[in-house]
Length: 368
Image (cartoon, rainbow, N blue to C red; front, side, top):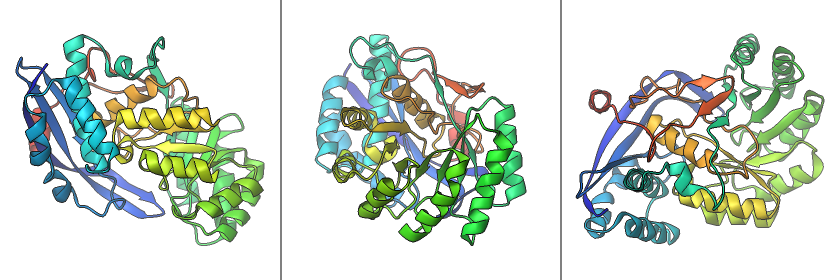
């Protein structure tokens, strides 16, 4: 159970189609796959995938910290290494994506050594992880007709929840008309949530969301800039549509700040931003203690990070909403050998010890 080597390889993966948000269109995803190898030859894999535009450090700058981190970790037991990593991450001395990727690899290796899945390692005592997790479809097309077609296709494929990217229209009228059209396309029984990606100011959000009230919106993600928690609280107190914090949420510290300010009904957690799976579990527990729901969402990672996020969701009985993990089709390759198919709006948790996945080394080499 002691660590012998830590390795990492970068990737640059094109998206199959540009992914449109109010922040702009994403066309390529960069990150790194990190591997922890024990002296007994057990290998654990993780993913370091900083969310584009949400860090002051570049990927190379973050990766430059790994050699220094690797020195004390080599020769340590896996459980001791996890404790050290968690302590340093909580102290803010490690970039959250680095902590996340290393933690994934350590948990994967530990699960293989102990014969347990990562979800079993993360789950509260006495809790049996779920075998599958409900997920939402994402509609990004700015054109109303195309957005309707995407939404109808999602319903046809069994999704019971659709998330519509908003903040893409030039006027309140066109924004609301697009929401109304998608609601018509999916019918009255499919959940509809909106994701504004910080696109509006308070007056715009009030006008748009008031007009959207007839369309049974499950919740709206980050309608205001991340720093405007006062505005989020005002919006939450004024509009009956639940408010979710996304870009405003990163680490446990920011989650506590949002909770203290009563600025959200739902916290949207990206493990890459939160600093790992264990930190994400802590956020979920503290939010639940205050009556606040959480949703796990992907950061458009490869299959490695997606599998880890699935294990986190499966291990979290507090999570009742569909999670934002239906992203495997977005990248040109997921870098793993197993399929992660979506069946009737659900993603099954990979079976087997650890993460239950195998790295596709040839694909990683092709996209390095």
